[in-house]
Image (cartoon, rainbow, N blue to C red; front, side, top):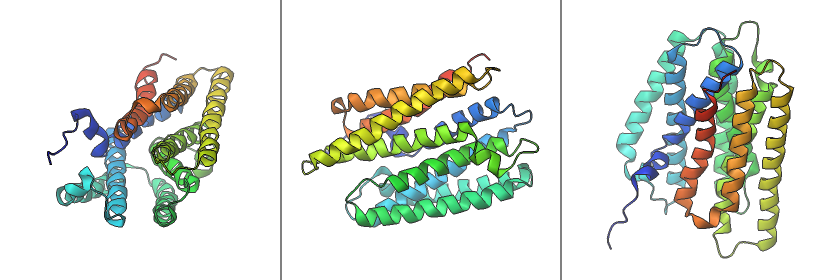
Length: 278
């Protein structure tokens, strides 16, 4: 049998490079929205490497739990695992040497979030019957928390509570969890044995929150009298709208393409609005 050739742009997702790129772009938006005066380049590098390392660890975990899993990461797991270990250590080194001491409080909570996400991933793999909204919710929180903390830690006088209660953090976490759950919903909808009634419920569970998130982002943008946070909320609104459009047109694409397009739904708004004038 002839080996299937994949288009070059598909490796953007297969190699796990989409997640760190999204995180770095949105970190810039967080820093700009919160008016971080001093934000060194080490914050962006450490975040990118940490996100990629965790993403690779998740792919390896899922691959090891499924005998049928033949992914790009599993095929090249030895060099990728070595690269992940090296970049993970480099990320930790940058964090220790460059971040303020207050970062350790954030990191302890972040480690608990990551541990919870790994535990929920193991549990959901064992169940495998329904969409694991708890796992996607934790994944959204982990990704948004890791991205936002590398900007929030440089804000004097503010701590962990202010981060977790901030509108920007909550909106981005919801956008991430909806993007993640959408992929599992689309994967399930392709299976012939899928329950039609359950599929309809899942469809509403995706479309309605996306609409509510977009509406909330629009309200927050309009209420921002200083107009500093408007680019951030416009990016949230655009991301939710793009996911809504992709959900309506998903029948045109295969799952691998949908994964890349979902990443672009988060990446493109960040790129557009990071240079938006305020």
